[in-house]
Amino acid sequence: MPLLDGIRVLDFGRFIAGPYCAALLGDHGADVIRIERVEGGEDRYVPHVAESGEGGLYLQMNRNKRCLTLDLASDEGRAIVRQLVPTADVVVANLPPATLRHLGLDYATLSALNPRLVLTVATAYGASGPYSQQPGFDSVGQALSGAMHMSGLPDAPVRASVNYVDLHTAQACAMGTLAALWARERTGRGQLVEGSLLRSGLIHGNTVLIEQAVKAPNRVPQGNRGYLGAPGDVFRTQTGWLVVQAVGQAMFDRWCEMLDRADLKADPRYASDELRGLHSADISALMSAWCAERTRDEAVAALARARIPAAPVLSPQQALDDPHIQAAGLLPMRPYGDTRYPLAPHPVDLSDTPAGFHRPAPQLGEHTDEILQELGYDAAAIAALRERGVV
Image 1 (cartoon, rainbow, N blue to C red):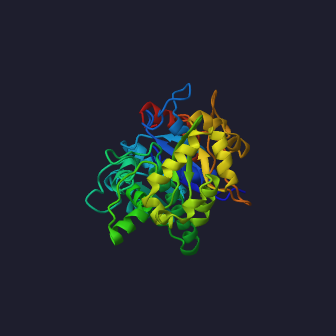
Image 2: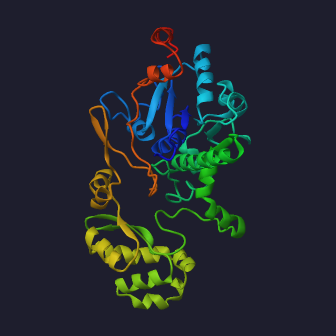
C-alpha cells in the first residue's frame, strides 16, 4: 500500500514550489486535487511541448494529480472549497499571506472548517518582514542570499538557469508536511507549515554568509573556480568541457601524480585547501593545459582512475542520451496524450513503500465531474455550475 494512501491534498499552487510539493506527496500515493482556474492556470503552458499546449514545467510538477476547475472569485466556487476542506488532510498554496486571507485559505479559516488540516504555504519572502507582501520567483532567492553575487565573473553576476531555490522549497515543504501529518497522529490537530524562497536561498548560501560574518573576506565571484580547494573548475578538452572538483590533501596529491607533477605537493602555496583556493587560477592553468592535450573521454577516464570527482558537461540532448542516466532509469519516459516525455522520478527511493508514477498531469478540468460527484453533486447540478462558469 502506498505510504500516503487515504491522504487527500488540495493543491492551490502555481508554477513550482507549491505544485512540486504536492506532486511529491502524490508520488507517495496521496489523492492530490489540483484546483485551477476555469480558463487554465498561467503555469499550464510553459514551455509548450504537448499537442494540446501543455508545457514541460506543468508535466513535471503536476504528475499524480487530478484536476478540478473552479472560479474562486464566485460565491459558489468558494462554497465548493468549503465542502472540500473537511474531506482533505492537506492544503498546499504558494501564495502571499494577503492573497490567502482574501481567498479564505489562511490557516485560521481552514482550521475552523477542519482542525485536523495541515496548511502548507510557500511564499517568496516569508510571512513577516518588509518584503512579505511582494511576489517573487526562484531568482529572488538566488539574488538576496548572496548566491547570485558569488556566481559568474566580477563584472556581472549570473543567475542559475535551473530553479534550484524553488525545488528546494518544494522538497522542504513536503518534508514539513509529512512531519505535520506525523505530529497529527499524536495530537489529533493539524498545523501551519511555512516555507519561503528566501529562506531556502539563505540555506544554500549560508556557508559563505557565515564566513563573511566571522572573517569578512569580502569574496568576489571568480567564474567556475572554487574557493576552498583546487583544482575546482570547468576545463575545455579537445572534444568538449568537463568539470573537476578536488578537495582534501589526498585528492590533491593524486592530482599531482596524474599530471606527473609530484613537485607541487611540496609547494607552500598549495599546502592546504584554503591556500589552493587562493591560488586556484594557477592550478586551473596547469589543469587546462593537461586537458587541452586530451579528449573529454580520455580526461574523464584518467580522473576516474585517480579517484578525483569529475564529469563531462552535457548538453540537454547528451544528458538524455547518457548511458548511466538511461541504465539507472533516472529519466523514464511517461505518456501525456500522444506525447511521451522523460520525467525525473521522486528524488529518493524507499525500499518498502516506494514512491511511483500513478498518472500523468491532468488535462484542464479532467476530473471536475468526478470530484464534484464525490461531494454529492448530481449531473444536473454539475451542468448548471458549468453553465454559470463556476467550473
